[in-house]
Length: 420
Length: 151
Image (tube, each protein chain N blue to C red):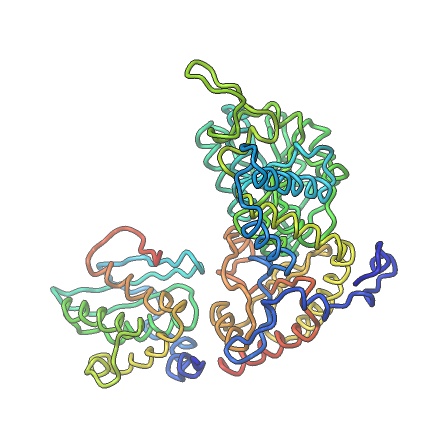
């Protein structure tokens, strides 16, 4: 289907990327909405699923459905093999040192909550500080607020500039001997900004501060290697990575995960239980209480296989090309202002339009078959920073095309007509 | 298929661009804040009640065309109405935008120009936009202190 390696990225061309063939892998894309071809540009909210994922889910339920890590029967063995096989795939996909560092959770939100509860319980005390940024999704704000309130700790927020870029020297000033954790997005969901995380992680580590990366918006768009980044935790959601809903991953360095207490108690997370003393299971099971989302884990494994087949570097290069094409068009749209113009951006455009509220833009575009997100994107502090109540966000995936960008631009002209 | 022109009628677009009774109200004796956490829309409704009658009503805040026009036209409609008439209008309007109104019923008579919001019923996700100001004014009238939320 595609050339191997990263030729497309190296030469700056994406000529080998056959998007029309890619689109055939996503059956949902081939439909009409309000009588128009569907143009799905809400990928930052959730992305569509390739046949390979749907087939993996179907196969599990039709042929292999059983609980994992328990019974001696064949179906359970097949389910366990597939489940643990997916863990290995994800370990490879993230470049983690050990598969035991891959914890299955419901999504990025649960991953961050797990760290807030468990790491927080063990390592955060009164007067300690946790640093986040202005560009957070609410899921990387609220768990820390709850923890800080509980522990009498202090939450510090690093500012961003008018382009939506983190002001790194200001972040550096916030790192103090009291800072116990830096938790920040790899890529901003509302602005698209790609943060210089390697540099920031090194800066934090020089002060012995561990770093959690919210990878919800980076894992789907670029090759991520947690060992190269040297992040201490990395969280992402399966459903944004072309996998099923209800499944996500927390990566954590072994030493940290070993030192942390369990998050939830129950089956699978124990070695032995008596009323006097319970011995917790080893990693990663210590953090996976109860029957996990087995089918979804296997589906996520299939998504990772699919993405590796297409190539994360090819995906990144193609999306960057599409973003450049869209940005050029948007810069020439009168009365339209992009919110988030960082030099390093993932493939999304957040914008406001003079005199028209994002909700109305969303409704008009929907009538044109175009799905975008209108609202605060669960990032109200970002909206406040730019002094807008909401934005319209078009977020691209590697199955989107220049034709669809053109349709979006035509849709915006239609918005202008309605509200002229 | 729902039609955009049904939703964004000329009157609605006009009120959204030039909202009437917009801004603080001198001498207001009751007010409430309404909030739609899904989209961040926030409006404040100011009421000047004299005995049981709405003497004047204003609103301010930011919102989409539907919520702004609905607030604007609500303020026009409510002036001079008694508390009970206002409560009745709330019910009729709510019925209209949630798709309950029948075309030949007398509801359109009661609502007058507000009948242009009938198109909203074809766009279920926009019902909250259309009703935000109405929930807020009702709360102000009842003297409820809590922030009104559509959720």
